[in-house]
Length: 450
Image 1 (cartoon, rainbow, N blue to C red):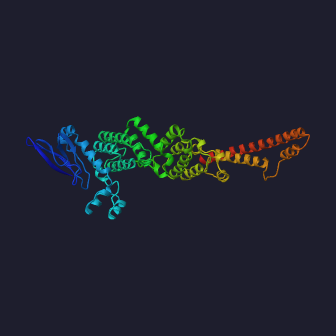
Image 2 (tube, rainbow, N blue to C red; image 1 turned 60 degrees about the vertical axis):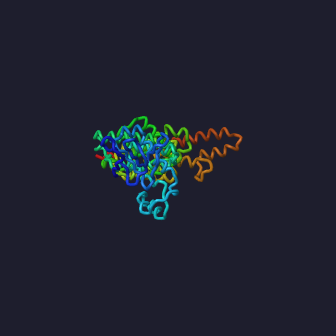
Image 3 (cartoon, one colour; image 1 turned 90 degrees about the vertical axis):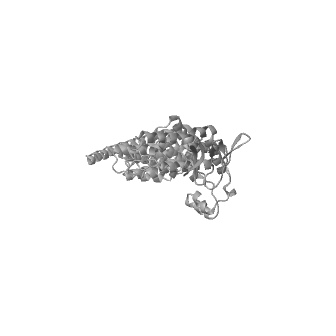
């Protein structure tokens, strides 16, 4: 970035620092502003963009008051925005500079073929400081740049800017760093385009995490949470992955995802009940992925598993898979922790195959395993006594069927009640045996743990 002398006033030089190939070149002399970027015609100021290859703008601070009075920053931002709004194919870029404006490898391939991508100007505006960048974003919004392109530009600038600033918790104690991060995060949240698909869920989650760490305005955080929650129905599991900064924490920040899912349930679900199917699959897929993390606590797993209401899942097979995987990766959990992990699962919403697996799963808590065995016994009894079953009919059901076509149905009904009462007594005895078995198993577990 070079300094270009633009005039002398009382022996002093006023300047505007511009890039190698600037979009706006401002010259000052002792009579005012003259040609190249600003011209005076008929007592009106107008800005002229001297378009070359790069769009790098940095206004010198030595003439800040003069720049403010003449609105040079606004005029320069408008000039860059004007250039960014125009179809890049309408301009010819020198062969030796096309590669400079394209950063990613895919863009380099496009430049080799002679094409220029829409975001060729991202790298140039990424050098602007936050206040200048916000002014530029507002300018391109006014000029009608596509919201997706605006969102991509904000993402590019933020990623480049954050890579130059230490964001670990140990650095946030420094007041200067904390304030810079907080002000920057607040500005970025305010300037996000309103269109739902204009910016990725993953970027907004990272921005939300930064905002929570530096304690930005609570109203802005709530606004961002609702914005992210409204996009969950179209997100993938990878969009929810936000890494933690500390090595002592779990690999991914599960707490921030839990917060967003809870916001979805409280504020979005009532307006879009049909979207719960996609969000349920998303959460269960996320649970299965993070369950492999050995540092993920039982409390964190339980919180995300219970973030959705039980009614949101018509089948709990995916949830059971995630729970089983978590218990397998975390064999040292206490009986109480394992029980809490399983609280979100409803046995009645498991498929027959999943129920059979769960009944024989020694990783599940003893209390739940016993309950599963008991419920399996009850279901088998119901199946045997149900109409149309392939199982052998009970005496009560046989009497009931005979009595249906008989003129003396009331006699059959009395016999049916007597038979069913006898079967209930038998089931009570079996239940007592299961309770005794449960107590014996619990006693053995206690002896093993001591």
